[in-house]
Length: 220
Image 1 (cartoon, rainbow, N blue to C red):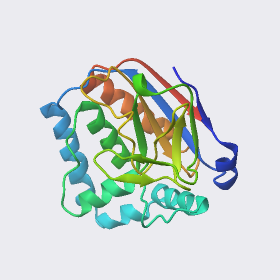
Image 2 (image 1 turned 180 degrees about the vertical axis):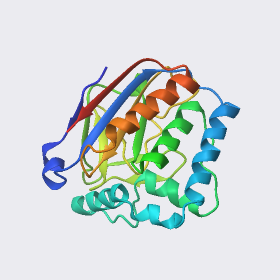
Image 3 (image 1 turned 60 degrees about the vertical axis):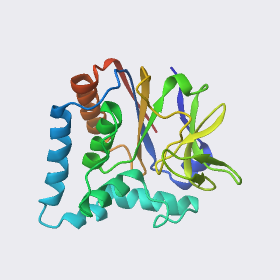
Image 4 (image 1 turned 90 degrees about the vertical axis):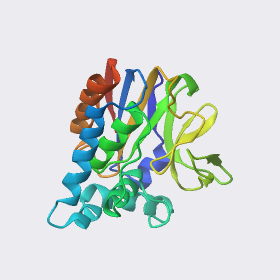
């Protein structure tokens, strides 16, 4: 298993940043009706709040925006994935339905208000460092154009950047052939909520993705 580190320069600019690394052996397949029901319930819960759009001003969403700004990235142009998913729900669209593991990660991200990176560990090379993107660094985001990584918080292995709280890369994306995953929950506001989000994710991975050999580590 790779080790996860936070780059000192990023930590200096975002002193409260904390990560939760969850690894698991899984079976990736089409989501079951029961998991889709969980997703439907999560979407409905947000839409039935007295002021649904208030979720966009939650402390965890605001902390992510502040972290991006501290690194020099415009949080209105480059959103954390939790905020992007919440905005999707508020606009009347469902969460994407991709596969068991991706759907679980998206659901937990919406529930926790925290971005989550998801990686096929067979495609990760060596240890993972959370750092700011450097000048000229790019990668092809999943289902997207090449992403400008300069000043964006990114996860990088020995081969270079492969993920970020905004959009992960195609290189390490989870597919139906994936057997071992790493999910990294990102908080720019301290470790509050990381343990509960990790526990919820682990429960769903066991219940809906045949999760085995689960491990959780908090990195600060």
